[in-house]
Amino acid sequence: MSIFSQNLIAWQKCHGRNDLPWQVKDPYVRWLSEVMLQQTQVTTVLGYFDRFIKRFPTVESLALAHEDEVMQYWAGLGYYSRARNLHRCAQVIVKQYQGQFPQDRETLETLPGIGRSTAAAIAAFAFDARETILDGNVKRVLARYLAIEGATNQTSVTKILWEKAQALVPEAEMTAYIQGLMDLGALICTRTPHCDRCPVAEHCQAHHQGRELELPTPNPKKSRPQKTRTFFLLWQDDYVWVEKRLQKGVWQGLFSLPEVEGELDEELAEDYVARLGFEVRNAKVLPNLIHDFSHYRLLMNPIAINVKKAPMSDENHLFIEASCRQLVGLPTPIETILSKFFDG
Image (cartoon, rainbow, N blue to C red; front, side, top):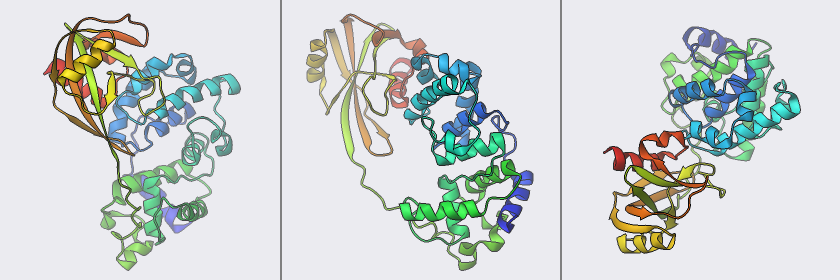
C-alpha cells in the first residue's frame, strides 16, 4: 500500500465523513447518491436524497414511476438531465439486468448517465472493486500532491491524472480509500487548502514547493453569454398557468411559465398572451431575476398577467393551485418568481 493511500485511509476512518445516509453497500443507494452528488454539494443533496429514497426505495419503484413524478422530486436540484438519465437507467437495469446492478465499472459505464468516475465509485463502494474516482475535487488533490501542471479540464492532463490515480489505488479497504479521496478534497484540500490538517501533506509536492495556491493550474475562463427572456405569470384567483417543457434543454420534463425571447413591456405582453387564447384583464411587470447556468446567464423578465379565460387545458398545459405547486416539478427560478408573487 502506498504512503498516500495508507495515510488517507487512516485519516478517513478517524476524521472523515462516516455518517452519511448513503454509506451502505446497496448499489441502488450508492448509484442514486453518486448521481445526485455530481456537481452538487453534500449539504444540498441530503434533503433531496431523503425525500427521493422514501418515494423510490428500490430501482424497481423508480423504473415504474412516471417521469413527471421523478422530475417533481428532483426539482430544485439542477442539472435536470441527471434525473432523466436516472429514470432511463433504472428502466434499463430492471429490463435488461432483472433489477440487479452490474458489478464491474466497464458495464456500469454503458448505462445512461453513468460516466467512468461514477461507475468506479459504485463498483468500489457496493462491490469492493479496485477502482478509483476522478471528480473535480480529486483532480485538485492529485494535481497538488504530484505537482501536475496544466489545466485539469484538458484531455492530456486528465489522461495523466487518471494514470496517476490508478497507480495509487490500494489492494484493499476500497470504501475507506474512495471516501477518503472525496473527504480530503471536500474538507481539507479545498481551493484554499488547510495543509496543517492534511494527512498527506508530508509528501505533497505542491506543499513542499509552496505552490498550494498555484496548483492546480486554473482552467481557462470562458465568456458566458447572456440571454434575455420574458416569462408570463398567468394567474386567475389562486391558480397559475404552467406548461410542461417538452423540447430539449436544461428544464426538459419540468413545468414552467410560458416565455418568449427578449424583454417585452406590459402592452406587448398582453398582446402576446391574448394571441395564445387568453382573455386578459391586466398586466404588471415584476422585478427582474438573474439565473446562472453553467454555460450562460439568463436574464428573466417576469410579467404577471391576470386572466379570466384560458385556452383548453391538457396534461401539458394547465392551471394549478399556487399553494399546491410543489406537486409538479418546477425549476428553482420559476419557484422563486411564484413564491414572491403568491406568498409575498
